[in-house]
Image 1 (cartoon, one colour):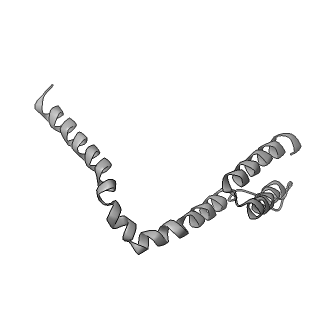
Image 2 (image 1 turned 180 degrees about the vertical axis):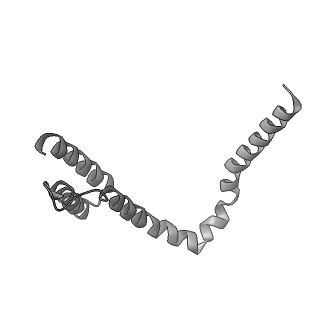
Image 3 (image 1 turned 120 degrees about the vertical axis):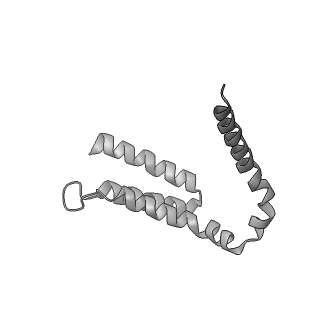
Length: 106
C-alpha cells in the first residue's frame, strides 16, 4: 500500500470517528439551544406537509377516480389519528387501505 492511500484511509477514519463523537460532546449545548427545540417541535409537521404535497402532485382531480382514494384515505387517517393519537397506527392503516383500494377496487 502506498503512502497516499494510507493517508486517505487515516483521514477518512479520523473524520468518521470525529463525526461519531461530536454529538455526544455537544449534547449539553444542543439540549439548551432554543432554536433547535423549536425546530424539533415544528419540523415534523413541515416534513409531513411536504410529503403529502409531493404525493398528491400528479393526482388528477378532474378525471376518474377524481382523487377519491387519496381524499378518502387522508380523511380516514386523519380521523384515526384524531381519535387514537397513534401516528404509526394512522399512517399504517391509511397505507394498507390505500394499497387495497388501489389494487382491488380501482
